[in-house]
Length: 329
Ligand code: A2P
Image 1 (cartoon, protein in one colour):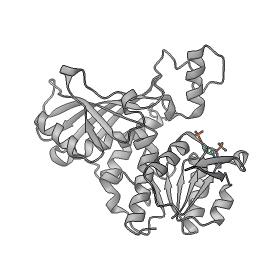
Image 2 (image 1 turned 180 degrees about the horizontal axis):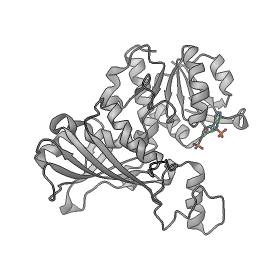
Image 3 (image 1 turned 90 degrees about the vertical axis):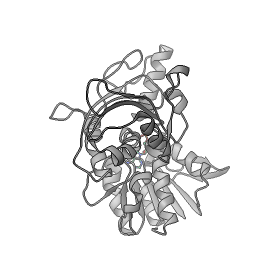
Image 4 (image 1 turned 135 degrees about the horizontal axis):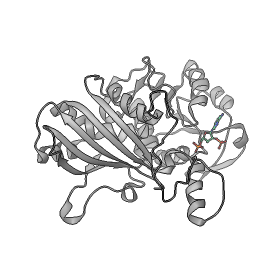
């Protein structure tokens, strides 16, 4: 399988290479692609030196799969060219997610919808992926009516510049700012840009993407997305109202049975998910599972995952694995 990683020098790109190697993805050739400023740069993959190439050279090489993690503009411009040339694109940006002609895929939930005709496949937003992984088994059983989610998102979700801003602030060094305010010792209720309705783009992604992934518009989601000074790993406080009542033990069991989800929930031993423990793991961790005592059929929980892994790289590699396994590329 000839695979191109577009944005190989970026934060998600780096994790993509790690995940491809760890999972022994069946590669015959790996093309590492970045912007013109990185072309010619040497990178190491599984002990072998690779030279970073341009998008045009990668396109000419006709890879079977191209995993894009180089921002929305690059995806908008180049994904259709690769698709036209016969490459299947797995796109990490938000460029194609809500396009009705493109599928938005979390493999554990809806990979079965993919066909050989899907040439641009969208990877959901990082906060969406960990949210739907926990909601899906519960929705199937109890039917969701309304979800209220507040996120506590790490700076790695913004990119290298934001990680550097936090490091500089901790070290007391002046440097370039990724955010309009300091992020150390702070919480910014501002992820991605503001929209006309007063919500941020991140909040609207959280509201809309799960409906598309679950192919169900009968439930609604209201989101508040907050950036906090954690280096990696997003957390979410989630309140879900269901149509039907539930038993807490059954909720824990359904979550544990969901592939890719692990329950960490024991107040007696202070066991609950945290970003430092989710770091570098592929699972979505769920804890603080409890009944909302103020409303019927309503559950509270806390969801944590490594945003660069299941929230981005791992999900994209799992989609690619599915394509190979099912002979769709
Ligand atoms: P480069 O390192 O050459 O800038 P991050 O999200 O961590 O900032 O990473 C973005 C990734 O996308 C990097 O690998 C970056 O390459 C790549 N990239 C950014 N703009 C382009 C572009 N116009 N064409 C190809 N790759 C791009």
